[in-house]
Image (cartoon, rainbow, N blue to C red; front, side, top):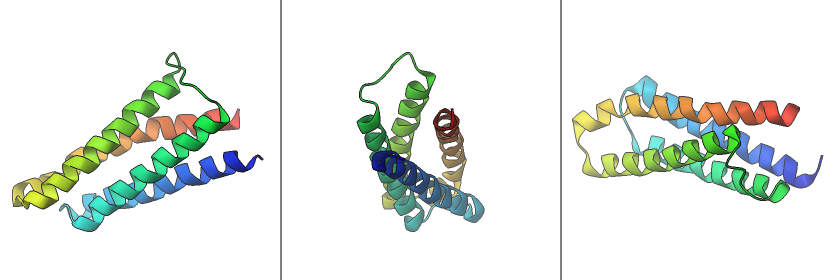
Length: 124
């Protein structure tokens, strides 16, 4: 296995770990906390790094590929989610802090589509 393939795999799996910890911890607590937001940003960082490493393996975007489209949608949703979580924490609105988990789970589920699709593509 080429080192860049190994690194991209490790980075994407770290994205899964950190993002999942943030989303599920927030879901269980039913309250957005600053450390959840840190997990969202960390997961996003590893996802972007893993995506960049994959770009080194196969340069260029294939906009006809469902994996490219779902991956881009997921990345942008993760980015929007992290920004929104940061703003929500800074505002300190109790109602928003207790409702935020609903959006988090939706973004996480959408993110799983390209993650699982990439795993399948990697095995074929």
